[in-house]
Image (cartoon, rainbow, N blue to C red; front, side, top):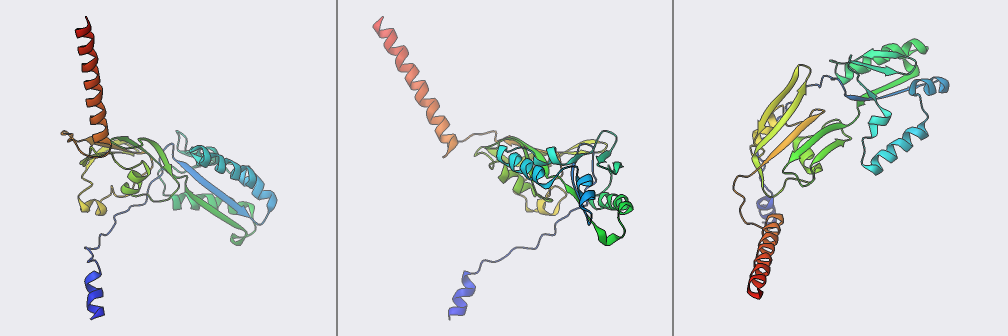
Length: 246
């Protein structure tokens, strides 16, 4: 009997949504976090161009100020598609995946060590940068320190949408090597989880339109409407009193 009651309490699950994710190709102005470690302390200082304490201080300062941590500690892909690493020099990484960029860094590092077991290389995107515009509670530019960020995580990070946001009409502008492309999304359509737009790409821009009809509701919309009514009534009383006194 208890088992039957327990079964009734368990929520039913929907269909499994298979996420569509393609490896990102690095573009101009992307920032890479490159970390090189070897068995030689001297090489470590040269490859990383700074000691651990300075990098740690930069990260703490960036997080405390709400800034972009890796803008100070990472390597930006220049207009020619290169990053400049200490000792190694310029490496062309534009158009490569992060894993491919790691491979070419390893090919350079191995020339300075005795064997493949004498070094470690880590290459990753320096956070996920995006812009949130329109009907967000906290619109602006953001960086999330994750390798993958969903559209819903990005929205939550920007303070969620306002009460008048039109979730049926969301615009996403995505950057490509050839230019920009505009996408229209309906966030209430569960098929978005199976699309290319479910995961953000670096430098995505999300714009949320307001609803055409702003109904009198609760929360911020009600407060704003109430304040407007009070202001209007107060102004009317002042005008009436001033007119009668004259």
